[in-house]
Length: 549
Image 1 (cartoon, helix red, strand yellow):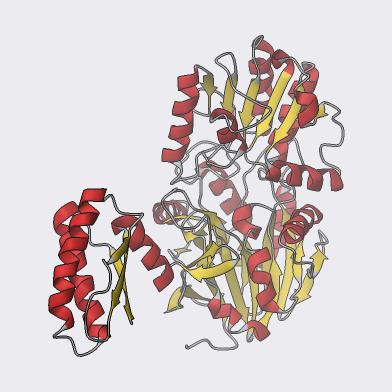
Image 2: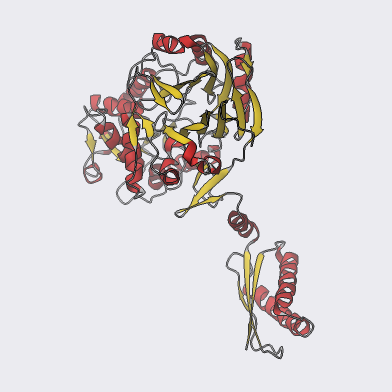
């Protein structure tokens, strides 16, 4: 590959062309820095895996040249793959904030991986990583301690936003410091690598303060039944809002979902959410009157194993749901999850519960910038070029067009694997296409989604599987009826009897003319699949075992 040591490059391996699985690489003078290493969750029960992560074989093969990993914040789509892939990098330093470090440590504990080389950021100080001068700038988002990363080199300067919004009145953390951003960018920014998630929204994303006022009104007006509210576990500002509103109205809160407990522990460790005494455990929740109980649970995306689904489907031993309860979806729908979210809402409606979500109430504000916020950030940073990331292709294209409309000189539309040459004296261009893709977690193995293994699983899922066992003598005398095993095919007993009789006749004919058992088995496979295709319209994956006695 034509990667020149002295050049400044940007290379996205995840998160450009999709929402989730963020992973970005920066190169200068032969050394690389990785910014974020996240996951994406499967949005279909039909997929043979739950967690997807970027294929980073490109940098694994160059790990001696990787200087550090920088994590912008603690959301799963930015840190979730670290516990699974970090062992590939020989204890390389990870730079991040105290809160993100706390969340990451708990992930490593649960994955039984104790080696973790963490280095905490110091704000308002620049430091060196390889040949990069690095500075951190605090932003606002839906999780504590989100940061932009500023990378400075002789060839150009980069402003990597991470996830952000402009919240004029954040309830966790401080507002964005406009003057700090302008001062950091005084030397000029060659390229701004920017969040695109909310680019189709024209108006500001809104403040958590608005959600708090709205939930206070909703909670106070609800006199009968439990309040069940589902949100992203990592949204500490939302958790604080729910706890505070509940506390003011003398309601007790119960966390349901393992990820909520982990985030809560990390929050306490970093002096967030410490002021609340209305959090109860599962045992005590059974003693509280429904009218005074707020259940904060995971499952806002309709996940089948999350807290909300367990309650709704009657799979929780101590909690249930009734028609008097109010269910609040205090989150946005991640693109691709609409079907499963609608399914869980349908089940809730069948129970008779009232449902509130962002469409009919102010129960959520986005953590990502709208067009007005993007324009404000452009004005503060004044980048020479804009490269949109963190979005599906439609988001990236819209963001690129909007940046052009706002007067940014150059815009570059990239996808995963595009190697971008950055130079303060030249226009940013794509110079090469690097192999990229997706890997999936299956058990404790990480396997390419394009592998033969997953192709076989999908084929079996679509067409079923058939096993045929044939016991035959060395003189080609069939010693028993063929044994058939096909649990993934909708064949009844009569179908199986007819297939066995048919195969017996064909085996006797074919065995006398086949020169070896490989050809013999292949012919039986074709005959069996053709028979089933005519019978039920499927051509199953078929395995034939021949035993000679």
